[in-house]
Image (cartoon, rainbow, N blue to C red; front, top):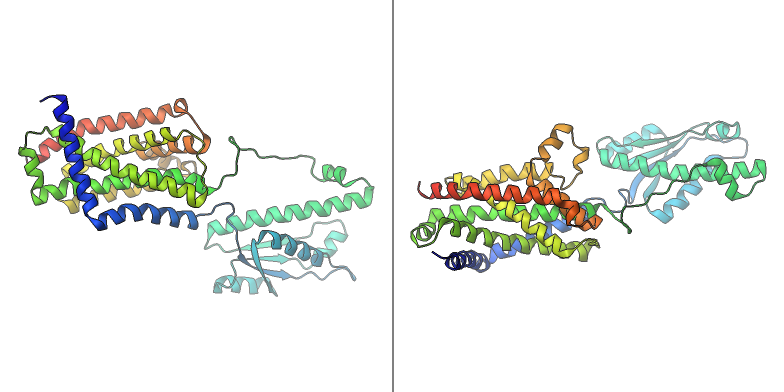
Length: 396
């Protein structure tokens, strides 16, 4: 059987599987709706430019002042002015720390600010005025965001007050007074120009994850289901090589995965303003490599399963750890060391890393040579294993 006939058989099987998909209106709708649902939900749920927006904060002013002067009143006025421009918080007055705690327990506030009783007196006598940030420990991410955001605001206010004190006592101009208060000027600059948010980090991971899910969930229907209803036996007795059947079904799943990957890329750019800094053709090549690495693994797992239900259970058991250990939602560097080692053994990790390097950092092929080598090697190994395993499964 010539190469031309093998290619023809691969295309025929792939076309058959794709036609079954396109004729199934529900499956076709889910093919489109799943990436849309995942992108929209992840894009609006996870934080973007700031993790603090309209957070309900209870404000307690216990300051007794010093004579007719109240530094806390000035502090609150400046805080409200900054908050009006940033809309970080929704401020609500409270009488004490205990009331703030009760409000947090009842869900009426998500945090609190307590100005100490001797706030003005301490400032007037050359001491530090104490401010307490109260957080809700049931929401660690919000607590960290609240502490970081408020400390940054208070730091700006503290610097402004220190500038005024230095200027009043020494008479030097505002520019020099800032140098006295803050001798170091810290500037942050990204590796590539532009403004980035958390979704720029997530978009490549969602693309790779959706492609993986599309392929891994499609294979049980493409193999186990056909084996159950008997149509696969018809292909097995036809003058078609086993490799042609596998490659034909692989091609159909590849087209399906690439379609969903393309849809996610369009949504990321259109809905969330993700900017592609790298080569778009290289991105599609990486998506193709991701599909290639997952398909062989999927064929092996599906071949071992006796029916479609078992195959789906095996797929889901494998996919869920990969979703959380491959850095789709959270950086791998934040994981414990043993989980980081596990993530290095997962093909999805290398697919996501390569996509992030290209999409976010504008990296070229040389910068992702390790990831490409791993994906090609893993996909090739799985395909070589899949052929005899599939042949053996078909003879059971």
